Amino acid sequence: MRSHLETTVLESSAIDLAHHALNVAQHCGAKYADVRVTRYLRQNIMCEDERVSGITDSEDIGFGVRVLVNGAWGFAGSNGLVNEEVERVARQAVEIAMASASPLRDPVRLVHEAARQSEFRSSCNINPFTVPVEQKVSLLLEVDRRMLKFVEIKKAESRMSLRRDERIFASSEGSLLQSDLFVTSAVCRATAVGDGDAQSRTYEPPPLSMGYENIDAASLLANADRIAEQAIAKLRSQQSPIGLKDLILDPHNLALTIHESVGHATELDRALGMEESLAGRSFATPDKLNSLRYGSPLINFVADNTLQHGLATWGSDDDGVEGQRWHIVADGVFRGYSTSREVAGEIGLERSTGGCRADHWSSIPIVRIPNLSLAPGRQPLSLEELIADTDDGIYIEGMGSFSIDQMRCNFQFGGDAFWEIKGGRIVGMLKNVTYQSITPKFWNSCDAICDARFWVPNGVLNCGKGDPMQINRMTHGASPARFRNVAVGAARV
Image 1 (cartoon, rainbow, N blue to C red):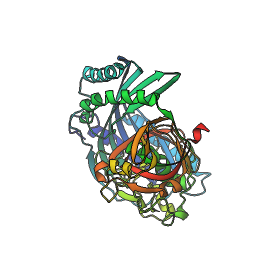
Image 2 (tube, one colour):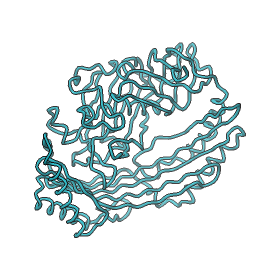
Image 3 (cartoon, rainbow, N blue to C red):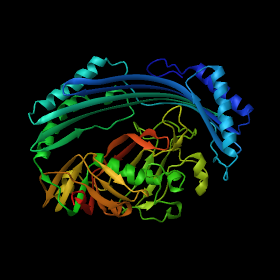
Image 4 (tube, rainbow, N blue to C red):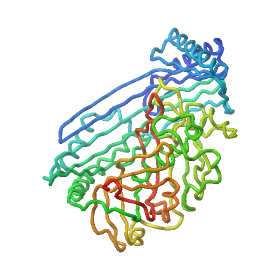
């Protein structure tokens, strides 16, 4: 495969190695086999208080072989891209599957997926790895400088993360899929200190599957003053009230709430009890499908692994299933899951939704949250109009701390900045606000969502799942939304 920007190392030789692995695995007894050959490029630049605190560059290439033998999975991987190592790893994967099959009660059955040959490339106008490091560092240091010009700001931090994933997927069913994905992001944070307290404010534009054009220098510089000033205002603000308040949540705050209370709750392996690590069960069990009132009639959660610039838009997943778009919740009713070919048949689905992804060539693919977004409101509504229509509430921006129970039901979320609303007007900042609720109760309390003009595709770059843990990424878009009579301030009791 040739990149749209440069020649990649994953050329025909990698495809030949993948097919060789398939042949060896089948010869050793695999009923099904797939191979992923993947190259990862990473660059992370971190600055702190107008100095470079770290620059890391890495390149990682390897392959993983997954097989089914007697209804059991076997998996092995290596970074040795030579025939002899490919043969050894393929045989090892089969041996692991054979050993796993002996105590197996329920054999794995994959739902059908037609064989395909395709190439997928994310949008990239500027290859981030060809932009001089000096240019990137200069931008971050200038962001730090602008924040530190305020005497109350005692800590300024900025960082940039640049990623590229090149992948070849080949299966014994005849699929050959290639992808070339870029992901870029930048963030800055100012911390104000005084009167025995410290408060931070963050600016984090959406991480997107794009090239360096996603790093908007003008936006980072323009927001440096704003977040410094708001960190200072936050330091001097009143503590969170305690009681029931109407909440208006911005898209960045909603991204984490969607992720934890909807995304993880509707991964089918969790709902089936097959994955329990990291608060891994779910109240949204299959018996509730098509009947549970997950939210108010305004609530529509759309999974879309075809979303332009989406972090989970990979062309196809690591089962070889093409990216799709479907409803998790439609008009408030629970309608669907993220699935793999392994678990889809457990609830009678004829096809996987394409939610099976691994974070590395050495990891076996697992069910992951898709690009999952709250659809915007259908009626024209701006944030200003929503605030004006709220008598006693709090407007919350950005992500903060969170906790959620084992069933993805009882939760607490914070935020990055908070404003008190009285009589339809913002009257000042607050600090240390948390809100608590039960997942269906919370989403059923939503009575207004701003329209598509205000929809923002925020994302999560560090979603952890599995044991051993895998880290993956996905987009969660939303417009500002209002939730009535939500408990706030319990963390202060």
